[in-house]
Structures are given as structure tokens and as C-alpha cells.
Image (cartoon, rainbow, N blue to C red; front, side, top):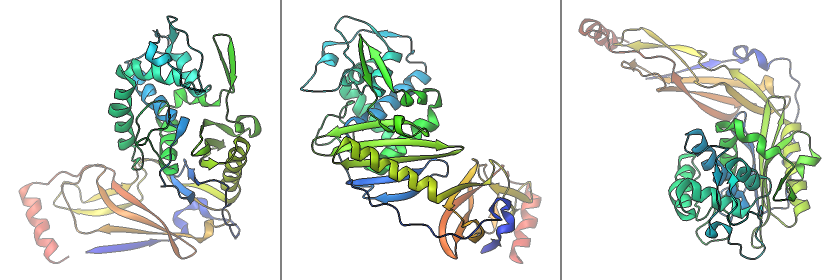
Length: 379
């Protein structure tokens, strides 16, 4: 048996006093694929060929950094630890980007991270890969791809830590947005590195290729990339107050164009959407009757703060329907999906969110279970 409880806007005090407005169509960018991801609400706002597989070039280094951050957090590495680069790591083919490491000269992990993120050094990427997994190939096969799978990057496969073109080395705009969001979420202590405009190592100063760090005061990361086949690419992130957006633009024809198109995408998001908090973490949305358990009711809600992004001026048009499956029979585990919160905007389905149990309800004793069994016959 299923019941639906319609919750009008009175349920959401934040959704009042807004004015009607229409939302412009998203910009059509001069790029092969792109996506605008709302980090705060975890919603996709704009998507164009976002699942199309491309060669990610140096955007690969987002995952190289993610795996390295994880190793540091797990205590396997220390930022102050010094590493002597191997001959393999220092090999350079053609005009590869590098941080100008020297043979026999030890370098700190923290400097390698700056060389990786700010200077996009392939030599830094290889040294970090060897340090974490003994070899770059093992780093990619055993760690990078494992993390990609865990993060839900279903159109991604890594062969190396640098992003040099390989047939089986690919990703997508959507997957790269997931990866960028994971860095912001999982490693805030390292995220400041992506805002650095320059880094000097071995008497060579290099500037961050992300031009938005100079052009937009709200942009605080993340990474550029380029290959001859895929063109110019940029993952960018910007935060205004508590609202963070992540843009991914792949396959622009020039460095300036990838910057301009990324700026257009971010501006579109901030200018046309509002993010609102509907519920706080572990705040009960409603209570549900339980049967054959030690408790007769259980609170349901979300284990994380719930934000939703909607077009500006549309707050009064947002309505919600709560659906749960009944009867709910014990045992019930904390975090178990109990129902769905369905949001509609202007009478049209907008987004569906899973509701979970906020506590445990163990089985009751035999007598209580028997009583509820009889009651359920008449329910």
C-alpha cells in the first residue's frame, strides 16, 4: 500500500516572497561538450554531449592529485617528505609541460603538488605516481581507475597519470565534474592549491594557465588541458556566498575561447538560478508508522543538508509530494530508504530525492509482533 502526502509551500518557509521570472535558454558554447554542475545542490544545470568520451589531456591530473591527496590523508605520504625523481619520471617527450625537476635532486611532496596543479608538470605527475604506487602504470590501473569507479565516473578510464594521449585513456565532461566536486568535498585542506596563480621551482616561475583566476574574483580553481585532437579544455569552479558551481568545457578551439565560454557558463548559472536549503541534516521531514518494532513511529529525512537549485523567481511555484511504502515493518535500519520526496516546479516534475530512516527500529518482542500482525489485517 502506498500513500502520498502533498506538502504545500508552507512546508518550506524559505520559498516565500519571490517574484515570477522566466529563465533564458542556456548559452550555446563553441565547444565539443560541456556541463554546468551545481556543487551545492548536486544538480546538473546545463549539459551538452556531457557523456561523450574524450581524451582528457592534463585534466587527468585532477585524478592524479585526488589519489595523492588520499594517500596523504591515509598517512602513507607526508607533504614535507622528500622524493628523488627516477630517470623514468624525468623523461620528456616533445614539448611536455613540466616543473623542471632535476636528476638526483630531492623534492618535497608539497612542491610536487604545486608543480602538478599550478604548472601542470608531467614530471611531477610521474614522480607522485611512482611514490604512491611504485610505477605510473600501476598507479593508473590500480588506483586512478578504482577511484573513478567508486565516484561513479562510468565513461572514464585512465592509462597514465599525465594525460598524454592513449587509445584507452578517456573521460567525459560529466565525469570530470564529478571528480572536481569530489576534490572540493573530500579534500578541502588541499583545494587552495587550485587558486594559486603562480609557482616557482628550480628558479623557473610558471603561471597557472587558468586565466579565470585573474578575470573572475569568484573563481578559485581548477585545471586546464590541451591536446591537438581534442583542443583546449577547462574545468573551473566558482563560489558566490554559499553557492558553488563547477563548469567543464571541452574541445574549444583556443585558450582564450575556453576561458570565455567557461565564464559564460558560470555567469549563466549564477545569474539565472538560486540555491535554497530545504532541510538540515537529520531534520525529520515527516514521521512514518512502523509495525512489529520497538517504536511505533520513525522520523524520515536526509543525512545531509538538503539544497535545491531552481530558476530565480520560481520559489513560489515549488511544491513537494512525499511518498512512502506502507506498511513499514521492523526491523528498520538508520539510513534505509523509506520513501521519496518529489519536487514539482510550475506543475511539472523537477527532481526526486530519496528519504531515509533517521534512526533504528529493532524488532519488538513476540507478543507485540503478534498484536501488530492482527492489526495489519484490518489496516
